[in-house]
Length: 277
Length: 250
Image (cartoon, rainbow over all chains, first blue to last red; front, side):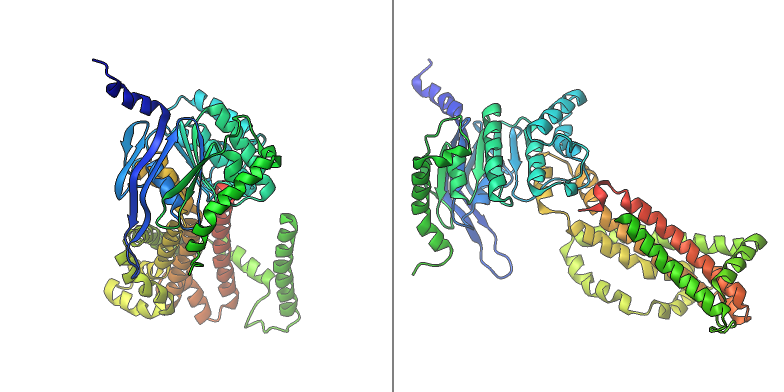
């Protein structure tokens, strides 16, 4: 009785890790403003283990998109799915999120910050210690285990937050402009670290950025969003090898791809800024 | 850096005390107006050795603690409610903003009418002065919790109580500490000043009694005692504030 049709959902489930199907998100109006449609009829499908970035003009709903994929908010229309299950406004296990804002807890040391979420899961203390120790080494925070966030630089604090996500061993990591507050050099190096983390964990990564070269450097695929209400207007395969780092930027194709992204985005950015006639 | 700050602070206080000592000893300040700091200290030592003051002192301290406990408990609860319910916030905002513009001591006769001459009227005066600083600090602390912490809490699947215990309270702690400190100062002022104006016992009353009887030496000894108590308690708060995890940065 095993027909091809019966097999199909399993095949799909193996390759598609997370997806939004026909998703719209409308926020109720406030302060005399009418309701705002942030996303409209958006489809996105992430393959298991890929590094997928999203670029788009400011205010196009990138962060809303992340919230929906993470289960932090529910779509007004359409479906959000993770590992074949519908999610709606609850964060399923296996998902880790890193935010643009500093989300480290100022009253906890680096170690305690990294262990925070893991401690809530009832994991064996020895195992917590092992994973935290590994994350501290991996994120280059050795020697700062007992430091408080106020004693760290912005880049180090962000590494603490990434560490907190890393110890949960998530299968799906969502990042909302995590390096947005960092200088260019730190950003490039953090990008290299992120690629290393991605290769080692095999997790699917969804990465929001406004920096086209950053999206280009890090990603297997890049989704380009329209001005609000946001939709994916194009998806670009970069074709970069899995073993890659910031030295990619020296290649000629790198510049061509960044230029292509900009040509796709330029008109949308003009619309977003109200610069069209 | 911290060492030099401490030295400057010490030098300012020591310079002031020394200047006062010289001014009094040289007769630039009338001895009936003010006595030299060394005499104040001797007077205080005499008062403490005599032991008669302890009954008044303990009565005042207990009254302050009563006013403080009520202000902190009620202030925190009200702060939580006002933070939680926007309608309450909008309703109370002008009242809270204007609170300290109202001369609290004007209410003292009313408190006496309502509560009698005893300690309850003094407690009420202390609470009237102190409670709003605790309410304001609680609201402030809760408002300043970063919105991203809410998302972290949801990713960590924290329940409501765990969230308050693990995120809301520690995030608000430095602000609450400010409230705790101010509420104490205000309770202290309210009770001692109330005793000074109209009371038959307590530290404030003892100062007023010495003042009325031209006993300048005893009066300054008692004022010094009041200062010492306030300074000691303030130091305790500072000690704990410095030890807040993360250095009190939020």
